[in-house]
Image (cartoon, rainbow, N blue to C red; front, side, top):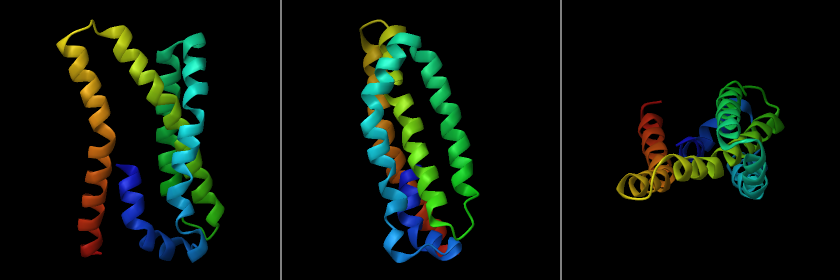
Length: 141
C-alpha cells in the first residue's frame, strides 16, 4: 500500500520537501531493487538464525523507516530516497520469511493454500488500495 501511495503522491511530495524533478521517480524506484536484490540473502540468513527472528526484525525496521519517510520534510532529497531504500531492505527480510513461516506452520492442505493465496494477493491489492486512497485524498487537498 505504501508504494501505491508514494506513486500517486509524488507531485505533492515534490512540492512539500522541495524535491527536484530529476529525483522525483527515485523516491519510488529505489524500493524495488533494494528489496529484490536482498531476498535470497535474507532467506539464507533466516535459514541460519530462524525465520521468525528475521521476520520480526524486518517488520520492526519497516515500521521505523515508514515513520522516517513521513518525517522527511526537509529539502534534502537524499533523505527520503535513503529511507525508501531502507524500506526495501526491511521488506526483503519479511518476504522470504513469510513464505517460510507459512510452510513451517500450516500443514499441507486448504489452510496452507489459503495462506499462500492471501500472501500473494497482499501486494497487488495493497498497491491498488494505496493508489485509490491517495488519489481520493489528493482531490480533497
